[in-house]
Structures are given as structure tokens and as C-alpha cells.
Amino acid sequence: DHLGLDPDAQVEAQLDHLYRHGFLAECNATFARMFGKSGPDALIGVRLDILLPRDKAQNREYIRQLIRSGFRSINLPSVDIDSAGREIYTLNSFIADVEHGRAWRAWGTSRDVTAERQVRAALEESELRFQSMADAAPVMIWVSDPDKSCTYFNQAWLQFTGRTIDQECGMGWTDNVHPDDRPRCWDIYSTAFDRREPFDMEYRLRRNDHVYRWVIDRGVPRFSSDGAFLGFISVCNDIEEQKLAILKMREHEAHLQTALADAQRARETAEAANRAKDEFLAALSHELR
Image (cartoon, rainbow, N blue to C red; front, side):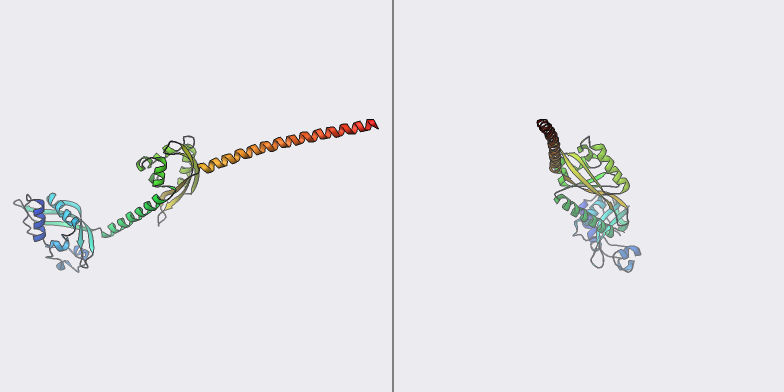
């Protein structure tokens, strides 16, 4: 109240004036409880520096934004201190009463968003921890949302394809799948989403050198604590060597089968020749007798 601020004065001068002369003239019971007080009387007359400590850069910037806006602002963030010394994160809306070119008092609302901020911070920390673990993994990993759109690819995937995460997100990753494998791959992928069931699929994925490599993709559905479907997370491995080994083994088996068939035919031919010889010798012996 009675700040006597000149709206045309320098921002830093106004900020200093506010911290030297500003105080809380009135508040409601909700505002008082937010600061750990039993009622409004416990806060009336408290200086601005107590409510919004000047040593916090975020508070100084909050005041500057308030000044620049002409004391007409919506949802500006600030860090307050309650009676126990705990930080309270608030969103504030203000409007000033300007008379004769000077701001004399201001009214505002403050909403405590400390809990929301803590939840958001915990989620961000959890996401960073997941990304750190995923990027350190020696396998390719991707994550999707419930609409079949991919939202994350780890470093192993990006290094393999040689593309950016923006290129891969959404349905961009399908550009790397071999055209001959794409319809089958999408059918398995889409069906698993609709049924909320795990899936395994093998397909050829284009590497950063434009060579297609066989990979196996194993995905599992994700659910929230209340059972809501969140999408899929999948681990993908390069199995090109295993595929080549299987093909060679199959070729070897085919050659072996051919060799065995040739041997069987040779044996049958030899046996037929022996039978013919035995029959000839028997007939000759009979004639000699």
C-alpha cells in the first residue's frame, strides 16, 4: 500500500523502491494459511522482502516482470517463504492502482503450486533417469504413446539409423524399414496395440550406411498405476549375423540332404547291380551244371 512508484522510473529503481517500502496491507485466510499463519492478522504489515526474499533471482525477475507489465500480470511465478522457512512456489496475478502517474497500491491473487511443482520435478527426474539408463543400454529402445505414435528413441537407435529423434518420432521410424517388410511389420505392430499384447517381429532396418540389417523387435505394453494404457516400450537387437548363420546352416542342410539323396540313389543303383549280377551268376551256374 502507498508504494508511490513512478511507472516511468527505471526498472531497477522501482524494484529497489518496492523492496524498501513495500509491505502486505491485507490478505484473506487462505493466503495466511499458505504461509503457515493462523490468520490474516499475522501477516499484515510484513515487508515484501520477507514474503519474496530479494536474494532469490527468481523473485527479483518476478518483480521486474511485474513492473514491466505495468502491474497488470497473470500467473507470474515466484518463490515465497512460509513461517517454517520452507519455499512456496506460487503463480500470481496483479493489478495496480495508478493515480497521477504513480502506482500507490496493488491487488493480486496467489495460487500455491508447490505440490504440482514437486510432482513435475519428480517426473522430470524420473524421465531423465530413464533416458540416462536407456542411452547407456547396448540395445535399441523406443517408446510410444497410446495412439501408436513413437515419442522416444535412445542413442543406440539414433546411431544405428543415423537420423535425429525428430525424424524418427511419430511414424518416421517406418521410413527405415525395408519396403518388403513394412506391411507385415505394421500389421504386427498395429494388432499388438489394439490388443494391448506383447509382440515379437523381425524385419530389415536400414543402417546409417544405407545397408539393411535384420533386427528383432520385442515390445511390451505400458500401463499406469490405475490401469490406463500408456503405449509400448520395445527393445530391438541387430540379428544380421544370426540370420546369416541360419541361412548358411539351412544351405548346408540342403547340400547335405542332396548329398544323402545322391548317396541313397547310388546305393540303390549298386544294390540293383549286385542283384542283377547275382541273378546272372546263378543263371550261369545253372547252365554250367
